[in-house]
Length: 232
Figure (cartoon, helix red, strand yellow):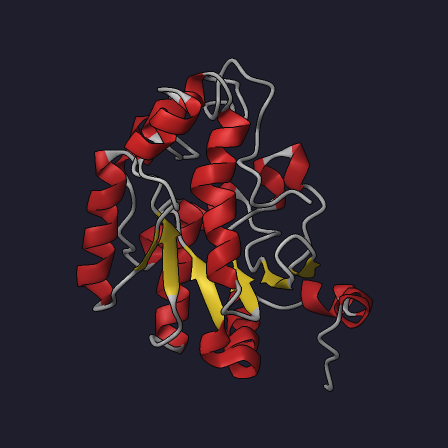
């Protein structure tokens, strides 16, 4: 099929994308964009699944992580175990400001006063800079994760970053994710076993209580459920 990789062309094929498996979508992304597509990895359950799938298709595709300098120790350890398991190097994407420089400019512990600004400085702006060298990116977002993600398409035009966006696991359930992890013996962040279905920065993430949704532990106490990467 001849695919027109424009916002309109991608939208017209919404039903066609929906029929594709994650592996088919990843293979399509690699075939079309080669090393001009990159996988965003936060070392959460969904992303380690995509790493396992992508490495089996093409281990040369860049896999990057946004290093905010505030991740859990377990997250960095998961990164190292994944690198050893798959024989790959994860691309570290850092903010323009160190934590010390951010504190000097905006005040100490900005995440406790203005988490939106903190996320913008340490996640959104670094991603914008990084994606300038790419034509597409791959994410692990799923519709089940949050109401803000319920309408995510498997392939869409990301107007915020000006690239094609692949969400291969959009229609997967949490059970689907864990089934794949266990069946393929994929390394995962041990915080998932301690009540953290969604893992971000240590300073802004708590365990989820029984009955709460997947992302209730993120930015608890604030009217905030997204870091800004997946919002227009």
